[in-house]
Length: 97
Image 1 (cartoon, rainbow, N blue to C red):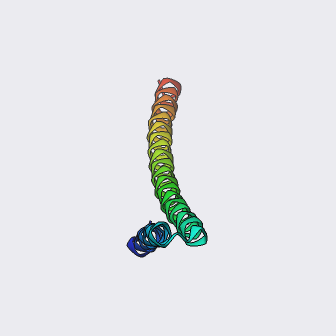
Image 2 (image 1 turned 30 degrees about the vertical axis):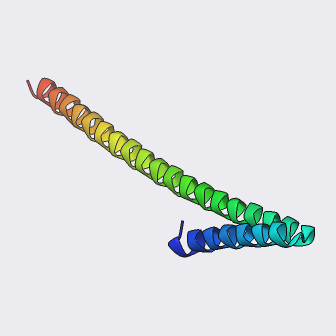
């Protein structure tokens, strides 16, 4: 959702890749594993940001849908009110004849 959070996720992934490569070059398996874990964390953070974005999009679509439904209901209520008033006016005219 935020550029800052995405940047942090990317930085964690790059940091992890660097640590993994350094571990491989030096033969330090602990650094390799820690680097892979950091990469996984970075990817997980990025995935979490994707989910936040999708949730925000869904929320916006839901709000738009509710607004459209409300507008439709208001329009139908106005139309019905006008028909009722026409019926009342017609009934009054019939009674006054």
